Image (cartoon, rainbow, N blue to C red):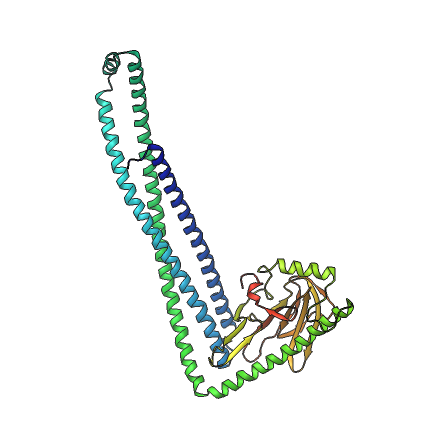
Length: 409
């Protein structure tokens, strides 16, 4: 089947648009992967800084295992992301190499055609041959057609020269991009080798420590279960405060005090709506930190047969770090007694945020707080040097995954 000139142009245009879309999609994916890679590198840097800060402290074996597990997880993710970047670059390099081969063949053909035109033009360029060509016409119409032909031929020759120039520039640009892509890929491969060595070192230390723990597994299991029991006790105390706040709001609104949801005022509804609108954009409850334990049911990092039901996140931060409100709200509870480190509960309409394991409190029940306002100092364990904030978000009494609400958590 012979395609018409217009059909051929449409096919060329569609091919160009497809290649352009594919290139845009690849560039977008590459930027996304690079952003994620840099986030992971910053997280590793934070982990290393916190380790360096606490290196003189005698951490428990359980805490050390948690540290190793967390860093191993981040390093593993970094390797995966970097590999994906390198693989994407490989595909781009292969695409560009194919383009270069195609362009070189096209340029070769164009230059051959252009050379033939130059020779033909040279042979017929003298004025006399052109006049004779016109005078030999049978009639005026034919002479006019011949004038048009000579003009079209000259235009085509000029167009061919411009095409060769454009294709040559395109080839040079692709070659430059290709060299950069190869350099970027080599850099990623080199960085991944360093990360892989670090990962192997962390795993080796983790495995050696796990062997020590396995010798006294029952003792460590008892410690873990005791910690879980204490965590459940604190959660029960928090739930008691929240249920009391819900009952108070319903009583004030003339509704049943047995309701499990807040009866909100118009101001409370507006605050809750604003809180919801900031889903995924809320600030971190500390200015600097890394998540050591995430939300939800999960096997214990040391004893896999034990299950942890984490209703929030544990964030490792630096000594002296200040806990801060993640959004505007009202303090509905401050608990500080000898059995547990102090914690603060803040209401945001029908949303609640809790900040546990503090050493100092800067607010009291009934205080209005604003986003980023410091509400207390995070407790630093004097024995281990660890500074850990436990942070929870709930809607009424139902806990939420903080990673869905906090920016890039």
